[in-house]
Each structure stands twice: as structure tokens, then as C-alpha cells.
Figure 1 (cartoon, rainbow, N blue to C red):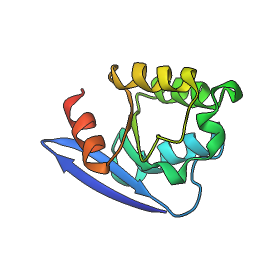
Figure 2: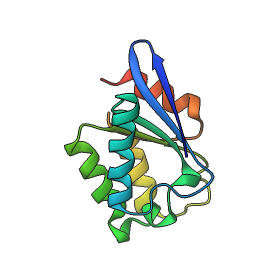
Figure 3: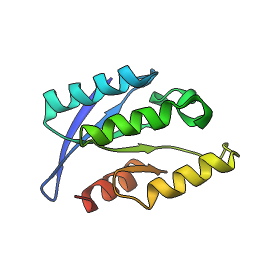
Figure 4: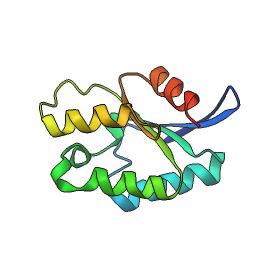
Length: 122
């Protein structure tokens, strides 16, 4: 796992990249958030989709809801970038749409889009 610290227009953002799964359950997501906070002091995290286990994207597991609730409690803003075209679930598409229209969680195609979204939100 690699953590890159960016300062974009005065906003601290941590970009996490990994070829291995980093988020596999709620605890690993919290561990990631605390590691990022400790190492970079950033409360805005970007991660590549391939580092997030597939159960996150199956809403019936409840994992996404639990993780996003924990991140909300700890004031962490979060963006996952990657390709979502293989998902056909209407609830997941609705979840992604609603998240992208909010201010805390984003599902985007590229790292650059993620940086822009997290820079725009306070």
C-alpha cells in the first residue's frame, strides 16, 4: 500500500494505491482512515477501486453502509475511483448517484476526478 499526500488548493488529500485489497471489512476501513490521519493528517481519502473488496459493492452485505457511517462519524470524506460499468444492480447505481450528489462520498472514474471532488467539498 502506498499513501501519497497531496495539498490541493489548501486541502489535504491522501491518495491510497495498492495492488492488494486494503478494505475488506469495516475494521480494515477504519484502520486505513486512522493510518492516513496519523501519517498525513488528511481527512480526505482517495483509493483505487481494485483495493476495495467486491462485497463493498454488494449493498445487501451492509458493508458499504457500515463503512460510510463510520467515516461520517469520524469526519472522513472518501472517494473511490475506477470502472463501475460492470455493475448492473439498480440499488447500487442509485447509491452511487446519491453519493455523488452529496458531499462526503464519491464514486468516480479517475483519480483526477476524485481529487477535484474532494477539493471542492468542505
